[in-house]
Amino acid sequence: MKGRKSLGFQLMLSFIITSIIPIVLMNLFSYYNTTGIVRDSITEMTDYNLEQTSSSVSTSLESYQDVLYQIYSDDEVIELVDKLNNGENIVVSKNQLQRKLRGYFYVKDYIRSITVVTTTGTSVFWDAITGSSAQNSWMIPYGMNSRELYETVSQADNICLLPSKKAATMANTENYLFHIGRKIVDYNHRNKQIGVIVMSIDETLLKEVCGGGRNRENSFNFIVDRDGYIISFPDPGQVGRQIEDYSINGEGQYEDFVRASGQYEGEKIMIHTLYDEETGWTVVNVVNQDRTFARLNTQQSLLIGILAASLIFLAVMIRFFTKNLTGSVRKVVSVMRDVEEGKRDSRIRIDSKMPREVETIAVQYNNMMDRLDESVRKEQELGRQKQKAEIAALEAQINPHFLYNILDTINWIAIGKKDFEISRAISALAAIMRYGIDNSNGVVTIRDEYEWLKQYLLLQQTRLRDGFESRISIQPEAMDIKVHKLLIQPFVENAVMHGFKGIHRKAVLGVEIEARGESGLKIEIYDNGRGMPEEIAARLNRGEFPETDGKSHIGMKNAMERIKIYYGASSQVHIESRENEYTRVIIRIQETSGDTADEDNCSGR
Figure 1: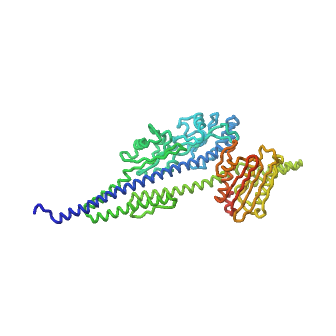
Figure 2: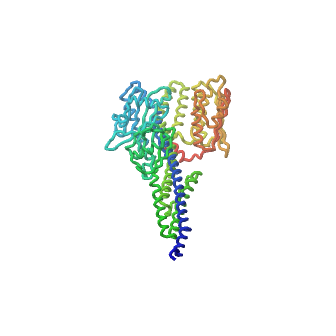
Figure 3: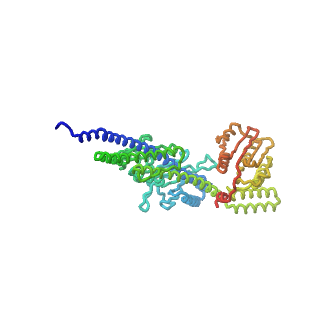
């Protein structure tokens, strides 16, 4: 009797062997399987986050490069720098240049200093940190004088990026700046070096693009340049430091640096990197795996403890937690696949049953997608604002009324001297300028374009002493169709300026405009000039713009892209040409609605 076990014991032992152990094993298997899914999802989302962060960094840098371009291509800036190089009115020129630089501080939020260094070593700047044009906040801490700065920037082929370093401390506020440099280009004398320009930008911009240090207990991003210098880091004290024994592809060095910086000491971390060839910067993502999976381990231990006390309760708990966890992960993966297939508006639905870790992932993913959509929207808006700003800048360079009055005065002088040829030319020039400046990007009728074209050709024929014959044919039905102003001007100018160059036969320029009903409008510009090889015309039709005979075809490219922007993919520009015989440009577009609101937007009102 003593050697026998009770039925209850045997049943319990059998129940444990046949029920509890398999359930425990199944639970463990489910746990590790779920953990692997979560780890893979985190890796996939981390890689996606790196790509989006790198893209956002590039987009932000491009927007500041656009401002830099506006400065170094400004004719007035070029003229003032040239005067400083030549020693002309140095004090006045420096003051005027400082005021000009100061005006660009309001274009972007994080600009802290703009510095111009001439070839003679003269430094002109405006500094928002010191609020001064006499005290520079970053060059002395940077350990670089004007001559060294000029040599460093001028040797770069395009944009020169200088790493972040600590600048002057003002009002107990520490400032960390990185810098974008570029040679100043005089487009009238491309080989002439006249100076460099450096824009200093607050490192806070990069920190915010990288996530602003949010949720640093779980993960954070930082940026390293090609020489191992820290460009941006959640802890400002690390900015400007150099990683020892740096190698672009060595992830172990990043882990050593993160641990040495006091982040995640003694914990298991995962490093992901993404290198940008254009900037030479590496975006580094650091994920704390211990904290990410600690809650899952605690949860699983709790489930196993509950299983020992009650099989039914444990079964319910296993079913509850496993179903919620795997189901939530599947939701995340399903939405990510939808986004991968192009459904960018898909979002993870968060409910009260979702585990905290997965809920954190879901919230971060939704926020990341919202930021991505907002970034795309801002980029599109930036493009529109840039276009308006460029047009406004051109319109603001010269007071149109002043020019009109001056031209009118010259016209009356010519009439007084009975020089009617000059009078006609001046009247045509005034009409062309008024047409081009007033609402320069607006919508007009073909009739308006025709009147402009007659004035334009009158001036060109006057300039060339009737060196070509013009033939204009416009259907009466097309006269009231509306198009964007100066739509055909680049093509006509290209024919006159380049097509007739070097030919010895009678030059002929033809313009034909036909209304094609529902098919829209057909515009044809023809010249019997020098033409081009057929293979070059074919490449232009494919959207390729090779440099030929020292020309980059940039004007043709801009004109064709402008038509695509205004009239969409349905528009068409086709070029036919034969060398030493002719060139024909055929434009097909749909009639614009000519809506008043669109016209107001184009004119900047």
